[in-house]
Image (cartoon, rainbow, N blue to C red; front, side, top):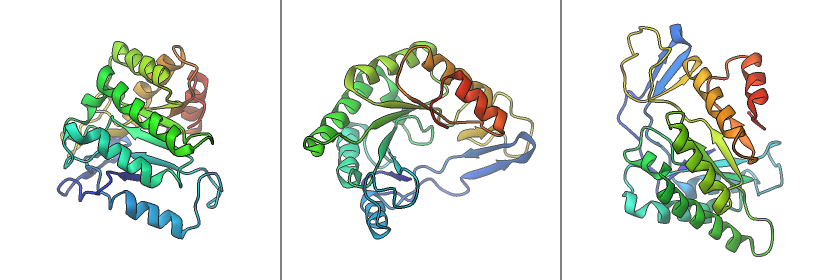
Length: 236
């Protein structure tokens, strides 16, 4: 489930979602449209959801990320505010620093900003846990990072205590995209054109860390899912 920012956001202007059926792909530039962390917390509470109670039959992962309305200088405070509101309901938190549709967000992938952000979230999760196991923090990475940048992400996550990786988000690349009317639209590309790159990123990460990896992106068939697991993903 996605709350994105503590205050919510209307997202980017419409149209912001484009289907490319010939390529089995979608381009989106939704821009984190959401009603905010408190609205999500209220919805989960009304459904009887609490961390670990499996009230809806599956674990609940909540994705948090700053919206375009939040300055980068205030990003950590915004993530922390969302964490504090949502930690009673989340079986894990996915920290989104990899959407291509929020200006400046991917700069949080850089080693120092990422370390500062994840350290703050992990520290706060431990404080709120008050002796119980803290909510696990997973970091969602972009498929467009270089191998050196991916290694930096792994080093940071292992150093500051993140408990997993999610690979990958959508891509700004247009590799593998066929000529279609919406192919030139800006935004994040998902679907079949992402299959190969997402698999490469999962394989690269799995060779460099023992952290669990959630494989995401371009999983169109059973064989695609099996390939992700064979590459080292723990979950899909």
